[in-house]
Length: 122
Length: 129
Image 1 (cartoon, chains in turn red, blue):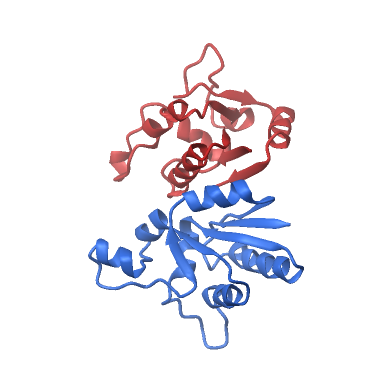
Image 2 (cartoon, rainbow over the protein chains, first blue to last red; image 1 turned 90 degrees about the horizontal axis):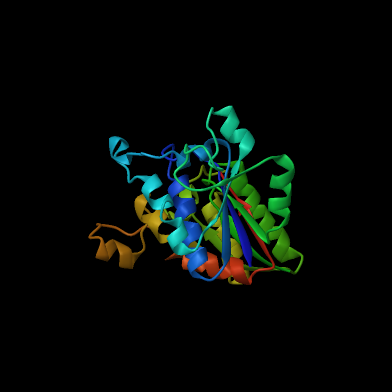
């Protein structure tokens, strides 16, 4: 089964970013094919050099960098969300993000959602 | 149709009430609700100390009634529950807390219960906060 998880929260605004990550890792360990889309303030989760200790939290970025080790390597961003926040994508030249992620425009996002059996947005 | 529900809205949020309405309506129409998984702020549904005003029916009680009528599987995410102070007797003992406060009809378990339910269901319906 193909599951699409949409990370839409800033990494340290509340527990949701961490809980989405925990949830999708368990689903992947159950054999589901997991994709992740970072959208809206969720794109902030992909900034490199995070230090959660300043907020008394674990660093989310370090955990996200391990996603490919769990065979979660279908990773996408919403190109509009990146542009609105002045972030460059990570296609080839730029290295603004801590994971290789494919930036998608609106039609590609629609196709991405249509191509999955379940969509979970937290 | 077999539904699995993922509720992350806190009990005071509209989405939490819609989750309960959805479950009640689906069951009334003869569908199955294989599991309701409460994660994030929704773990507060399982706190037996939730005390609504006398002329209101809180969601904890509403879910309990539905659970009794249909033997619903109401699962509270353990990591989120511990963090937010919802403990069953076993967890209270192992974390050396003085009291347990999990409401009857709910169980505390791990995210594997969500993965299992969503992979088996025809539809996963989410109720985010």
